[in-house]
Image (cartoon, rainbow, N blue to C red; front, side, top):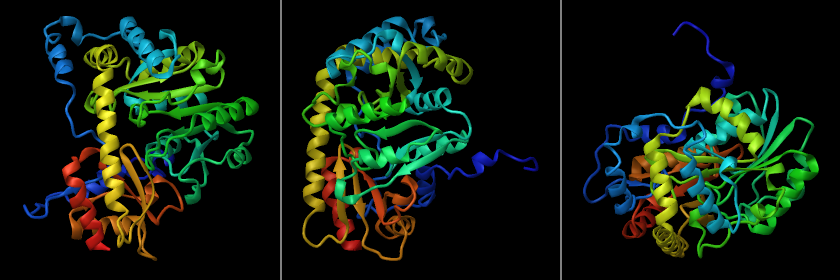
Length: 390
């Protein structure tokens, strides 16, 4: 390649999961020590059989292969709005929804509407790695709110407030967190929205894992506020909720005025979410509340089993925070980065996880474990490898 590329792109690190999976490319693993993949948060279970059967019945419809409106089919957005009313007790109307190619595209829509090059977005550490990657690609500066172990991954309101400048356009947080699994309490979410109001900026919450809060409580009460859309934007996903990660089932939730502007980007970026995905989301929202609740309970059992096993005496790796699909752990090797430790785990223990530094600066002492894609029967074996490695 002889021509130059964007300097913004040069600053973005390579996709971490692709990097880590590249470490084992071409390797084979013995039957007595198979690969344990704690790298990527993918549900290990299939979509509901009735959803798959429903989609099979639609394949012969010629409309399935056509574009839909940019924002999505009206009946799908109505079904999603009804799902929000059940899940949150209140929610957006259909005009406040734009269906997207996963939560990742919803994030890009939000940031492109909000920010110009040179603007700033406050990002809570540890951050979902795609967020700083996307911001840097856009020429937007991520301003990192530091991680404090003692807070279990929860943000400090005063600390975040001190980071706001005239260039700040948004506060960006993930709840439940990827990578820590920590859930923002509803009262804290309310305080974040109030801070956004005071500073006249946006509160952007990525709530990809909102279906995996144990007990199924209302994640927060922002939608009950009649003025929620003045300062709140949600990045949503049904990919984890209905085990549709490959379908890329996301949504942007915001004011009608914000969605109007987002559609300018949507039309030039993706046009629309695929119709087959929209029908999958509609079916899930209308029929799979109990199925999703059962998977939430199953993931809670896996988490509890993992936590119990990992916190046994003698484990040199320390569990710092956990929940849902994730565990955030401190490794015991002073002087080694998370990348060095993760590479050794892959090479010597046939165990994949992500290094802490891909989630933000100063996090080289940590690893992220994603146990959502391994069955409960594999948890004991995975933990034993940490114990033996340490």
